[in-house]
Length: 370
Image (cartoon, rainbow, N blue to C red; front, top):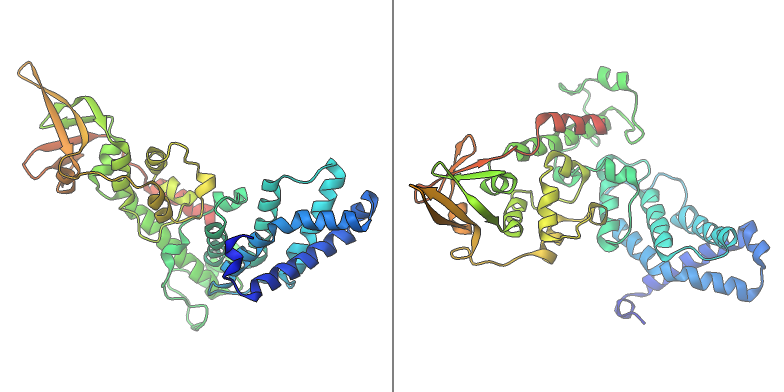
């Protein structure tokens, strides 16, 4: 028996038993079950195959129930909305394909059904919290494309004040009722002040993206540089430790940052950052998971005083001289503008590159979630 069960309470086993009973109901109420042959051994076989996914379902449910947010709006229990349809789908697949669904298909279908059940009717921030909770306990599940495409870092709005509970009588100066009525009520917004909250929180995330996209950072410049000059002389045969540079680029992100489509759209160079640390990096695998989890798995250690983060050669008076820059030298670099950084010893470092992110990208993101 898996050790995860040995230290858990009876509630865990009870949840699995209830889920199993409702999946069994879905199997038995499907017309395909009777076509396949409704013998007792056949029913037990189907239930045993579906029971392999019960621990995952319970872990996801518990992680979501620990969230502090609105409750599901579907009007059905999780067992009715998720377990019964899953059982019916499983047996129908067996009938249609003459074989059981793949393990991945079962995991993704069940996990996403649970996420959809809890996220339905919620504000984007609460829906995103549901997605993150599921992804953090079951990192391997694949999320629907629409969830990935529209994801932004709603976790950055944690702790922001909300108007929905107090419902002040006056209009918000930035988001008047006329604008709300003109665009029509969104599915995840029940009233005007909920809409105001949504717009304020979204604007906060977009402002964070804008700030990060325009922030001066020597490591970001070095990462994107197609040409580097030292005291006006071009560095040739340049070698960069992209993994160490990438770690420093990640350090500019807020501590609560999760992987989102919005993050990569506003900071396109980040795709290369994570690929430098993990050559097999795939956004679909990491979407909604904390960036801190990635770093904990792929962190690189280095001697900041002696290990080169960039090396090469510069020409002077017809001769070639080696150049080496360490982490500590770059940590102490001061921004001078126009791609120029001055190191502690007075050396001028110029990175010629296209800075990542722009207000136009951020505006596109804002339009996407309106």
